[in-house]
Amino acid sequence: MPAIKFYDHEPIPMEMHKVKIVQQLNLLPAEERLSKMRKAGFNTFKLHNGAIFMDMLTDSGVNAMSDKMLAGMMMPDDAYAGSESFYRMRAKLREIFGMKYCLPAHQGRACENILALRFVKPGSCVIMNYHFTTAKAHITRLGGRVEELVKDEGLVSNSDLPFKGDIDLDKLEACIEREGVENIAFMRLEAGTNLIGGQPVSVQNFKDACAIARKHGIISVLDASLLQDNLYFNKTREEKYKDVPIRTITREIADQFDIIYFSARKFGFARGGGIMIRDRELFHSMEDMVTMYEGFLTYGGMSVREMEAMTVGFDESMEMDVISQGPQFIQYCVDRLDEYGVPMITPGGGLGAHIDASRFVSHIPQSEYPAGALTCALYLCGGIRGMERGTLSEERNPDGSERFASMELVRLALPRRVFTLSQVEYVIDRVKWVYDHRHLIGGLRFIHEPATLRFFTGKLEATSDWPERLVAAYKEEFGDDQ
Image (tube, rainbow, N blue to C red; front, side, top):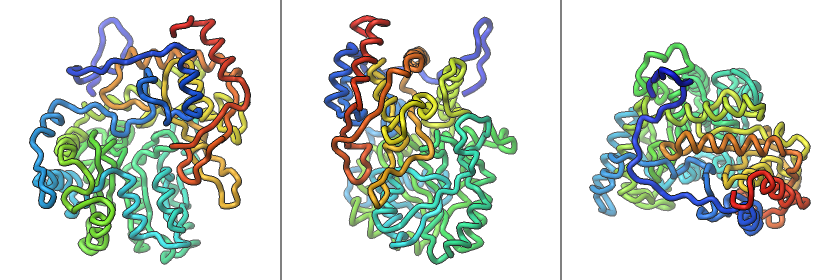
């Protein structure tokens, strides 16, 4: 996104696209939102989309496609085996990442399943800068465990550190020495650490970490699902790369890794995924898992229409004007809320604006899921659906005790090319109101708790009548129909 100057207005992010198709939104009255929240078991995942005004749950599979992507969906090859749509997609991935082999899968967690089945053994560990929920679940399900080695500074919510997703290289060396190479399944680095605020990783850190892994003979894996945001930050925050083209930065990162996987629900703006592999033998050791769990090797559980859209989307993800809108809207939102005193994760990262719930509702203990409660409060007071990224998203320890998260965050995702700046202003206004009335928010407790990934399908209830009191205060301020 170019730095467009204004003659008589403060600088604001400028969209580099125009809107051709729209979807009607609906803002339910506050009392109806309270009723919907109760029926959903105080879990925003279980809300029906028709009850939501601003859906900021995720950017996964809900980014707006371009006209060229939609046009691409009109010319797929529907063959079960040998689809030309797959070969066009593979050729584009080879062009961008320089890896010869490609395994298609229906989305990112399917890739994680295949990698875990191939490499994880009981008692083994996977080294990460920071975990992602589904990646960790696949590993622990098979008896493995995760070692998180993000720099300590990455967990400081309010700072000006540009690359808070960097792995700690000293911790990495110490972990390898402690665990032993034979007990390490692989090293996974996430480009844009989802659970600590979408914080990026520097190119130099990618290089240094992969050099250490290579020295010890450990397989290096990149989760590139949030790569496009990371590339924006590499170009704008890493001095060495300010004048380097996005494609060149991408290849420089890709050249460090043995395996790259991604969810195209994020990277590519469609609905699919894939694993790219440098080594022929590694490729052959995983291809049967695609046919077993996903589909044939030239569709991998994906619609060929989506593959055609992805192929165009990969190209668009290499354009600065395309990948800049998300981070710039996020930074605008973070800056405005920070000015109001709302505790935010700074600097703004990718994916969305992240609220530090541990400081926002500091009176709620972690055992009562403060980030989950705040997420519910934002829906009650504005029809905004965010996502809890804290203890509720963790799984219990083997003895049944809570595993308290390192950070209690509420993510307000900004799907790309979906919302306008006026809608972002609405969100800022309602978050500020909730912050000024935060003393009314209470905790949550489970009434139905699945053993795995409980945040997706679990049901909760309020620990008191705080939702009713919060809605009453909101109605007094805004009236019955807001």
